[in-house]
Image (cartoon, rainbow, N blue to C red):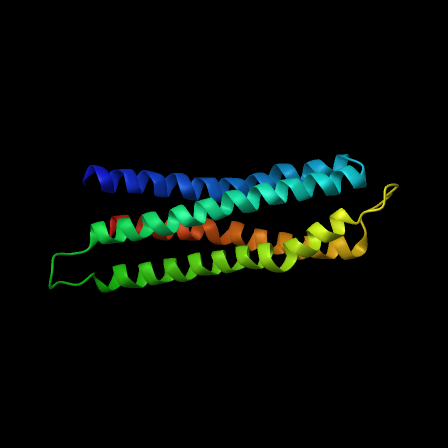
Length: 165
């Protein structure tokens, strides 16, 4: 393995750790922590955490795309030969699941986040509970996050299968 391939693999691992780590942190720490806060503060805090997670995820996605291509090119067999059938199947499934994760993240950012941000900006001061329209959008946003939290480890396991192959 060349130094560039090793560096690319390391950055790839760091990027997946950033994305999945951010998702897990949001689900395990940020989400439950806001239940202890007043609704107005909780909503503003969740919105700021969402923005941070989305930015972190886009950076990780960009790094994963770039390093994934570099890693694949580094593993290309000599001219004239092909990847094994098993390698091609595992790689295809991994790419499809990664694409689904990116699609889910895109839905979070471009479909639900603008409404969440607008409803958060329009909050009245003396709020006793989460407004239902805002809560509904957050539930959809969280559902996509949970789906990505489930798909992420599968993609990682498929990556391990590619390395073994």
